[in-house]
Length: 267
Ligand SMILES: Nc1ncnc2c1ncn2[C@@H]1O[C@H](COP(=O)(O)OP(=O)(O)OP(=O)(O)O)[C@@H](O)[C@H]1O
Ligand SMILES: [Mg+2]
Image (cartoon, rainbow, N blue to C red; front, side, top):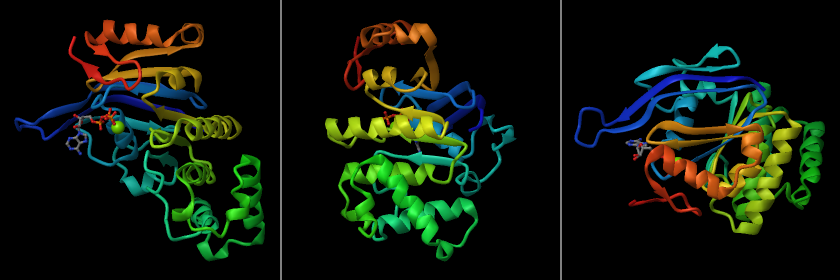
């Protein structure tokens, strides 16, 4: 686990055109090592852009990204990828659907261990199986199943394991349960909570569900128009209800908010 320090991040898409869109507006955030922050915000607030900035998916207009004391700002995305695990809404993104669960895990594991994929031995396989057993998802018996044949929930659980098996310095979750039915989503959230705690990961999780945002992790931030408009933790957060969150968002942004999906509505 490592501290993440973002300083003055700025990004405008299609700069200089009529479509110019400020996605990150002088955003600064320090995430102490081991913090688990949930990230809220309406559609287009800049949440995914924030993750993409951390991952190095584009060149920033300005600002600095430091992880574990190392300045990543000018590092290409593939060189950051080893230290940052990420998961998206689409369960198949970032996995090889025609490879088996075991092969996918081995791939994720050996990438970081600087081991050859073909050098994965029986001990490693036993380790993966053990890991899967602890998750109690019935996946340990499906090691030879292709990723593409697992259910959405099983794939997200497996992807979560793949993203963390190599012990990344940082875990980024971008609405990773949004495509799942409520029951499966709850299961994957439980799994997320236990993996993050067990591996003591520094984690940022984007969600549209305010209830989950308050229940998971130890701190909640809310974004609007590329800025952080709310940052709560500790007692203040423990006492907070979804209604409080909605009210605070309205005060901060001057906009109304629908509780469930955090869609913007005209005031
Ligand atoms: N590659 C891109 N090119 C042009 N505009 C972009 C690009 N990526 C994001 N944007 C714009 O930047 C703004 C922020 O987008 P972003 O995807 O970060 O929002 P978000 O908070 O993740 O929203 P959602 O909840 O819908 O996922 C939006 O106006 C979006 O249209
Ligand atoms: Mg997004």
